[in-house]
Length: 337
Image (cartoon, rainbow, N blue to C red):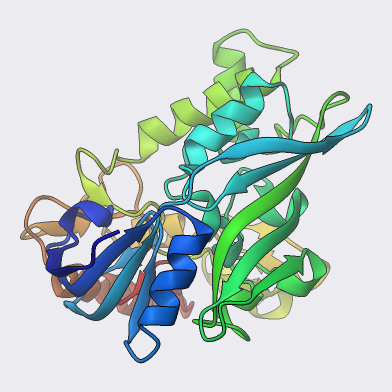
């Protein structure tokens, strides 16, 4: 466990942005993490997971601690359910595939989402009708200041749409070290409510899908729309889908009757940000080495040597143009550093 100085983070962020950490260390156990925190009490710290949900716009003038804790296991089960624990440094998609290989249901709709397990509760990640909160039981986290461990159960996490206690009340106070999920062993609740999944299954003549079939469908859809970060720098969806009060939405909908939407409650409607961005003509646009992906307008990309500032400038232009056209504010889902 060696602390390195002036360390390049290019390979530690999925945008592939060239930025340096003042100091960098990877930790592989709870004890290593505790030691690093104890020995560097007065240092500014930056906690790094899979680097998939951030845009680096500058060098990081801090000790970057890369959480590389590995391991996954079954901790409890009954006839219907299984409780599985994953360490924070496991790759999310690999973990999802492991659950499917074991015929554990609940995470299949979130296949191929980039990042590590430890950061999934922070964002309450979700896709195709499911979110982390649906299967999340609890997580273990270390208090950065005291090195004490604390368990956060589902209710304590205050999950919302791409929101949690870790983005709000206890932001920058804890490091998630492991997560427990409750998954089905039988009578799986197969969720194919999204049209894209149904279309993909129909294309393959699958009428009674298994967990693996749903996962494969999601992977195929994501690969058709989203670029592989190893080939083209990106961090998946850059923007959140805006949620509007129905009363506000109805006024906008009168002006734009073709606008797509989904009801999320009796009083709220979700509008696809990708559709809004497409209507403003940004899809596929390139500004030097920064741009909007040609297949999915929600995704901003680095064509090679874009800086974080250049990608941020594109995002701000997109937000401004969408607001001018529709009067709808779209927020970044990605953390801008």
